[in-house]
Image 1 (cartoon, rainbow, N blue to C red):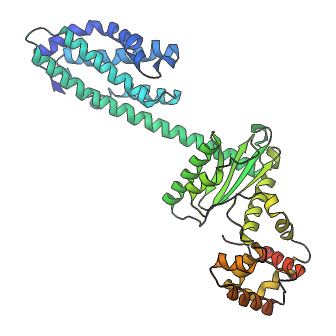
Image 2 (image 1 turned 120 degrees about the vertical axis):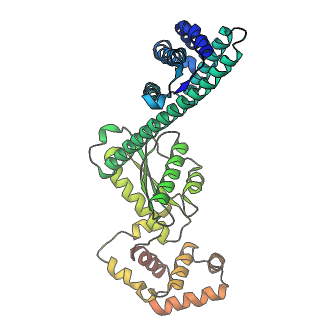
Image 3 (image 1 turned 180 degrees about the vertical axis):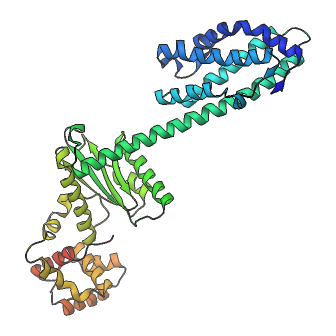
Length: 389
């Protein structure tokens, strides 16, 4: 407790009868100058905020008139303001507006004390000013902490609701009623699977923020350190800047594919197709995308398992311990069998490319200059072990 002088006590006592008047003045005139205040519901402005202002004024002035300004933390006096802060956060009142009411209210009280001060009470006024500043600091700190805690809880709850919806749609379990019409299904695969809780959380948060900004809404997504899916009801196309925005958040090695589900029930199949599109595009050496099924239509078809898949896949078994030759084969097919283009991509001399291609033919028996053998080589790449990246 802070003990006040008799003069300060007398000054506070003269102002206490004005509590109701001051509270009405705050909420009906002073707060009107705060940005966003006029848009608040009438009952919030006229009843709830007025009651909070009245409580704060009376508590300070009554305590000062009794000779002591209690420390709110010591007697639970902050609880009332904390509860109001939780309520305002739940209602969506901006924090700057909430804190603006407290700072403007303190100014009104200070002006009332100044107006009531008589000649010779300058020291008492200064004493009350110090007490007001100290009390205001404690209240502002408690209000801010409670507001931010509630906001964090709201954001976490909303995020979990979005993840639950995405999980239900991807698993095809009972979320059909929550979504109408087409759903854009975006599959994302990060360059390298992240490990460690903090790193993964930061990555997922950045990507989630980028998705929300990209589509102008809270996107339902299910993401982890390796990637995942984002679902956007009512959309059928990626924005033109999607790749740029998402790679800025996830890194330049991000791969993404977009498919469209005609309804909620088709989301699982669309998600699986998106995953396969990325796998096929990666196996073929395509640029990171975004990819669509039409971009890899032949390759997608060739990668489907059949009775002959195992026999096709083993055609490239002789290259298993030669990743340089496998990379050359993949790049050469991607560059439409243009040896000079292949050399540029790999940073080799064209003669080195010729040597590697000849070695591939020698080891596998596939003549890459023959359309049939080139198609077999492509199918073998697609049907081989799943690519990790």
